[in-house]
Image (cartoon, rainbow, N blue to C red; front, side, top):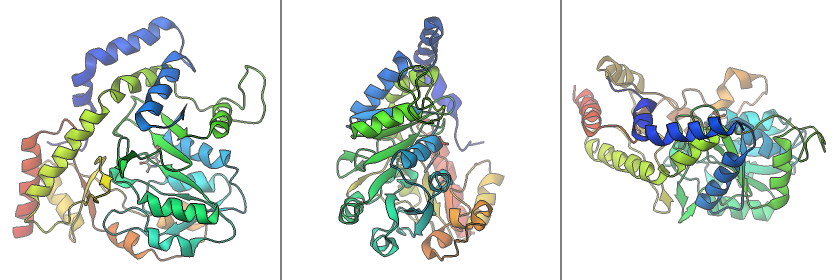
Length: 365
Ligand SMILES: *Cc1c(COP(=O)(O)O)cnc(C)c1O
């Protein structure tokens, strides 16, 4: 059997480092807002080339708090994509603002930059591009449009730790960016965790208070905030794993290259890496016109795959009441064709070969 992800393989590679880091936190007797988080925030900021990192409870909270801290709420519109994990859009709706969807580019599956301007109205406050699957959105035109219309750009970098756009790390380009450290992400905790990053000092201070009941000084509250912190055990785990991130991303890129080569003569469409991009392959997503049957065929042969995502956000049941009745042809079409193959730094070459030969044989049947 080839699992879709296997975090036990990861743990066994770094067991000693992780065990001793957790031990250190347990011995310290300090579990919330301590040295481990402070150091992780500093190290991740340095890695990305940004000034401030604010650790929070999850990627979903990071997005929700980023939208809130920018003062976006009822009456405002935020432009984003429907081809994403639901949290990107929930963050807008939970703040009382309206999501306005733009279709995606059929090659990179990120926001189609040529369709942003016509979605802008007087109520538009921000754009949230998503670096989906680990491939960056085309940030230069997005930043140019944002500047022209006075909009904020919030990067959803939850799937793209270490990915680069024209040599710059994603997360360092917009006004603010959000990361998830869900266990299976390229940089993942062993539980829930997330972070907001920005170069804006005032925004960073506001977010530091927001995540901690609107308080900087204990028992003095400036406004009503939430409890959303990245705890010391998760922070120490992330510090260990951050040291391995580049090597693990390199291994993902090598695996993607092998997949690309072995699938060359098949009928599937393989992922694209634009010349301006460094893709970190959080997911390796192919397209096939017989997707469901191909998935069944792989499963029968012991290979687990997934679909990211089977239903675009604007067609989700949770979103039907919002009355968003729009057509997003590329988003809707690819949701029927996409299939995510196993990819993680511990995937073995023979597992890649087996998966590819099953796909090639399926096409020749
Ligand atoms: C994982 C993910 C999130 C949410 O992160 P959580 O930590 O699971 O809350 C948001 N956006 C995208 C694109 C994601 O992949």
